[in-house]
Image (cartoon, rainbow, N blue to C red; front, side, top):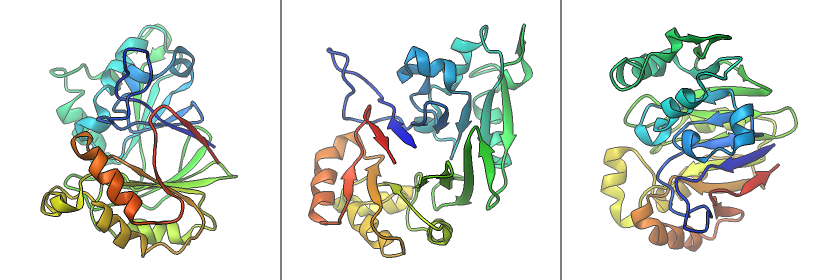
Length: 258
């Protein structure tokens, strides 16, 4: 399984910027987990292969360029972009984004080949398919309805915490998995800003450390994501000071493989 954190921006030489303001993970150039930068960072080849998008929650940094992605491909799509989400999150997307005010209701529109976008609701705790992947979602502890994910291609299994503070069902789900190759977990704010992290339901490095005590698997790669750009250096230093084996900060634009 190959996973890339799509960049939010690029420098003058076209290299991915380390600062990450948008969230979008690309799996095997086919499935996107969230869609913050999907409309601005995909290569031309990837634009032709990504047709499944899993939305963990409707915050703007996770869906910002999803409408642009569909809009850009509107005339050439021969199959719809499939938006996998809970019914509750789909309702929020329809109310707040695809509402004929912010952007058209693409799920109701077609090109000469057929529909250009469709919603594929999934149920909490029940495995579903997104392209070649088997996925299970459970609620995590964020300020809006949000799910964490367990994803498998049959050979490798990975987990995404999405945006969350202290949570329980997520750890129960992944501890039941027979194997875990990688864990993507958020670390948004430095330890000094714990009150803000708790109010906005995010993690600090110290909180991340405490959450990892709930994990029963050993030996997997642990990648910290969702670091707020304004505090990036501080958060990275605090993560390093945890001295947790195989804990690293995920690099935007780099392809990881398991």
